[in-house]
Length: 138
Image (cartoon, rainbow, N blue to C red):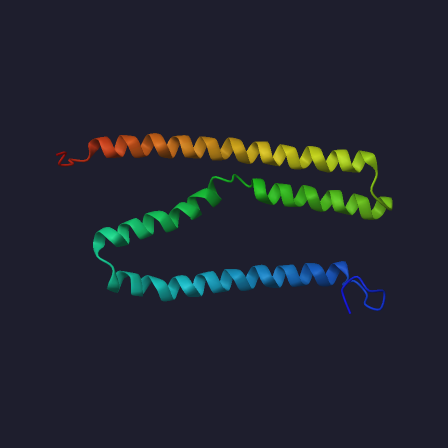
């Protein structure tokens, strides 16, 4: 049987939400546990320069999450409200489709602006840092 067969009922909204929350918490626990296991190994096995590069690259992801400015949570919330309006309204209309398109396009534009700003600042900061290094040029 497939999920679309009439013999099998779709999971309820409460069950889907519960599974999503459990998956989110399990992924957080796994990330913390792996971080706790990986850090001592990295400090013991990598030279200082390589460890510095590893920490710089791994923490860049955390910085990107901070520079999100809550946009992900806001978009998820708005999409959830949109889905709720569809469920209460009884189906998809042209107005709902336009609303979804506008919301998705706005999210795309905002993420593009954040990416360009962060990329530009990082690029300029990297160039400024490289200019301060005493590199033997041959």
